[in-house]
Length: 359
Ligand SMILES: *Cc1c(COP(=O)(O)O)cnc(C)c1O
Ligand code: SF4
Image (cartoon, helix red, strand yellow):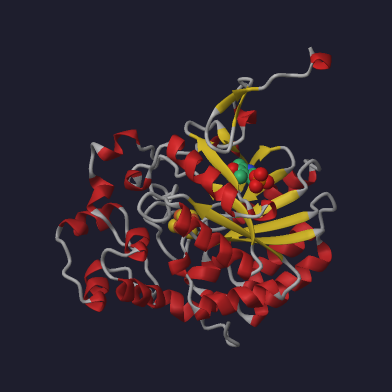
């Protein structure tokens, strides 16, 4: 955490040009990456580039944030979708995705502090920042006429790309609608550009926490290697504010698809007082299929994790069913017809013999 709002200069100095980035890394740049970056531009803040450099070209961070030739491999990406989660049809008002009755996603920006190579929106980002901006009154009027919406979830892009002033303006507008009780922000800034967690932001969030039942911030991180003293300090400052900290992780092949790395990450969340919330099965995104792994494998990993973590620290393992069918739990049998079999801890399927009085 820093005292002055210097995050915008950090943001502006990020690498957007492949040659500059590789010059900084001092690694030979494969020519084929130019075509990759043309389809899927890079965006890497300098402090992150340094961490990538220190970890090396085969490291976890290089895999998450540097372009890879697999992004353009046609065969690999055959099963990939441009819009894997299909939530566009649920835009019910400007910047507002209303899909589940009680909560709505608010997308005030398409800009992120980094371009994650696995991003589910990688085929649609870099859009028009000011898109719909002028119609915010229409969004408010939709919310007023839908009092069943009790939570607004800021997403994007990354909502902390907004200035503190703009964020405060939106929060104040939502606070005037009595049916809105909870606010959530999903963000990668605390980990990627921790300078963003400045005193003014903490003040805005603390003030908001007096006007809403809960204000939560879901920190997006996928590996313990993403952390250092700087971002841990920023997250500590958030944990000492009045808001609730949640976690959000994407399961990714070659990044965190083993029990040790997941355990280390979730241990770290616990240590930072971030409450584990989501473990997302990777989306089948075009250009990101090299991160995909079968559901079967994810379920096994999750089962392993459940044995390693205390119950209150177990995230929900969820999957967005391709084709716009929505987000469901990927582990719990409630998403399939209950087969009557239970799986024991050692993996044996057991037919549940109901006591006589149940049949
Ligand atoms: C994930 C999601 C939400 C929030 O769901 P929670 O279960 O409250 O985390 C809301 N709307 C959409 C469209 C979503 O994908
Ligand atoms: S922060 Fe989220 S929305 Fe932004 S690039 Fe990464 S995965 Fe995509």
